[in-house]
Length: 140
Length: 115
Length: 96
Image 1 (spheres, one colour):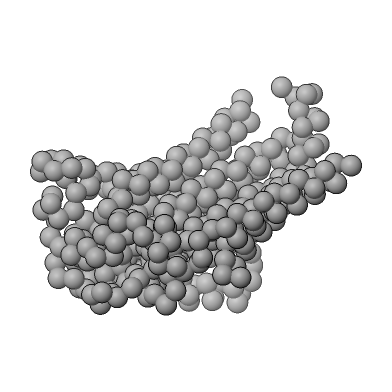
Image 2: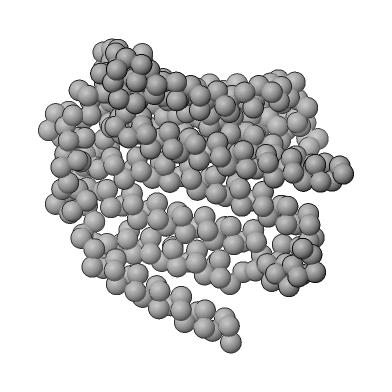
């Protein structure tokens, strides 16, 4: 696509969309949203960037192997967090009983496992949405 | 007319089913499937609604809240719906590459000549 | 002929489903079976003290039913793996 206005607006909006997505992911335990919604917002930002500037620009921003790494890393981080519960002698995916600090309710860094799981899900969903788009759209 | 949400969900489901049955275009079939999924989400979310209750966030003790369980379950359903749609679209794209058409009837007729 | 039969079947389905919807417990009734279950009462009472989340939905998704969420993440992973496999198999067969 070769539209100057689209390119400039996408370049201007891209950081703000990503920031908003990160905000939703990080506040998943305090406000509506969470890993899925925030991940989709982040992915939509990358999709907008790709639509405006093309695949090469996105891959120069974040190369292809980083996307595939994020896919697996999100799921692996999730399973690792679950296994922590088993290593300390509790059940799979245990939260406070596995020693995750709950913190003070209402603060950003609180509620232990929920916060970390939201991060893992956000990483996974953002990379998946973007990769799905890239694979369905890619022309050869 | 208390159950307007349920009725709307049921009608939406039938609309999606009709889209899947009446159109032979594969993309429109996928759209119909998505409409049916949306109808089920609407039914579930509506079943968790409580009149004059707050959203289940930062409640004061003793305050009535809507049922958070259907919302959490539908969050799962949304992801499955996205995965199914993406995979179906990938399959349809491959079918189009192979047969040069999106018409399900034509593809079924021509399938005999290919193996 | 076929569209007529289809329309008839669809109308029958719609009538049956709407009749079911009319029979369901009234919308927003706190004593409906889906609301009155002890699980819901437990979640509404204990979610904040158990998990430290203000949002009950996040508490259910990421703590009480985190195993569900693991399954759903696996579904996403499987979908993307299947799509990549389709793409690679096509490129492989085109190259031969």
